[in-house]
Amino acid sequence: MSGHSKWHNIQQAKGKADAARGKIFTKIGREIAVAVKAGGADPNSNAALRAVIDKAKANNMPKDNITRSIQKASGELGNINYESIVYEGYGTNGVAIIVEALTDNKNRTGGEVRHIFDRSGGSLGTTGCVSYMFETCGVIEVEKKAGMDDDEMMMTALDAGADDFDVVDGYYEITTSVDKFVTVRDALTSAGIDYASAELDRIPQNTVRLEAEDRDKLLKMLDAFDDNDDVQNVYHNAEYDEE
Image (tube, rainbow, N blue to C red; front, side, top):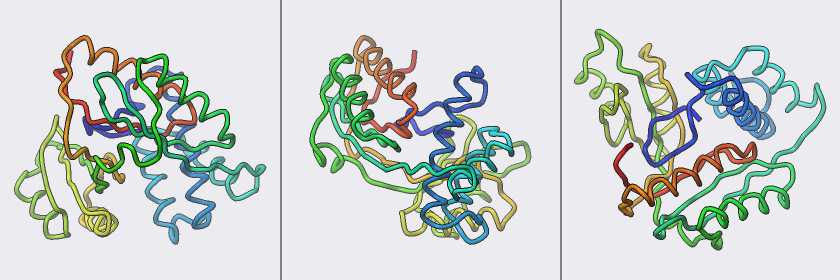
């Protein structure tokens, strides 16, 4: 959802229309449900739930929506189970695509994902056909505000165990290993640093360069995935010039 990684296309809620925000809230609500099912409804003892709640707040999700999502997941307001599914395939010019979904109906979601691939000139592949091209890392993004010192922020992140640090479009982008992700995230919080997003991300190990026409085809595909309520995240290895 929230996030600025160029490989990760799910849109931010900030500045979007109400309908777009509603879709973001739906996706976050499903993440809350999965986190509660896995670790309980108390964010103080459930780090995964705490992280999703932080994401919800960063996307301006109302407190009442967050509370209702937790209550639904804990059985207080009904009981819906979501299953995590990962689809892999190809877009225009052989671009590698990974689609992460949470669904209560695998047949529906699978059919819709296949349809998006097909109508966009791509193809749904088999499990493992492109995932080997990506490395899973923790990516923490902090908005760069007045008075923040780049070197101090970098040292705080690296001392906590981060692997890399960069400044991208007005945000500090901190990259960690999967094992160090929670440690670095919590160290930033302890230092009084608020993060805009903190998620495990899939970073491509090689890229496919697209020109304008193929870029536009890919972006239409990504938009179609983004519009699907079951789709949580989409990753790709395309590189292109912005419009």
